Length: 382
Image (cartoon, rainbow, N blue to C red):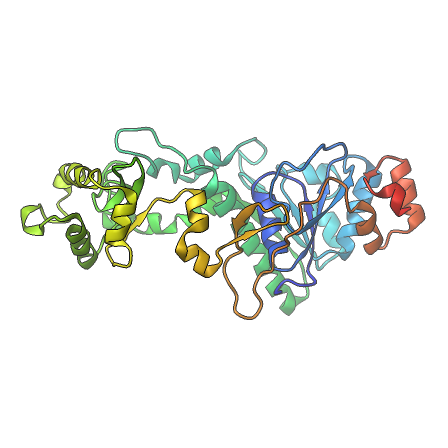
């Protein structure tokens, strides 16, 4: 796989950090997750392909262990607030002295500087500060977040993954590591570049929920069907809009022009009345295979078994038969081969990892005796 041989040390966290680590593991990196002592279980649910080492970073010997790990690692991924790693004597200046080739990835909510850099937050807060949340919501209603996908996983985890891959590529030229300041506010704002760049065009001139691409247009929204399900419509271009009207059994000459914004509310009511007369399956029979840009709104279970997903093997199952999306994008020569094994338990690989990183058996015994590490396999291993 494309990241084969890349050693990643991931400090345990939630959502964006674990996702970043999982993507790296899916594409071949050797990811070791450093968990806190006493943790009952992994709460990230994104541990595929990783190994777990339980370590007390708050005590100097534990910090010393991490420094030795980073001396042999290619990437350190840390998800803490600004200043936490420095307090542990594990900041970039310290670790890059130990290993000048280290890629030190810092994934935070607000970034490593600024007045919000040391305060708590979640996806909705980062989304709000980026300006993007102000654009999402129905007309006349409060803004609402699209789950915790945009900031946590798009602007955070995925942008951090990109930063790591870029830094690894640059290292092939310079031989040097560097620090990555990945944060969810700026990552989300960057994702919204199209929104910013189209501000002068008038594309977002109407109030929230009344524009072309935010649910305001009758040809770019969702409609309820006779069986309580939903269809998604995205017939923007005139030729696609014509096919939409044909499928709905409507005549264009009897309707206002497509881009008559003043008539959009009434047209949405008309379209809603038509969609409500047939079931989702019946609308699929009408629109599937056409360029009307009308698709069913699928549940997870339906997406899993949809013909298109089946033909492309878009989903995978692990050893416990739990389904999840196949890693993307699909590379032709070196595709991701995600692990099908169960997720690691806390400290399951502590001894194994320490040995690989050059710790002697006596050092491991002493660390365990001093309660710097934990391992559920330690007695058997030693």
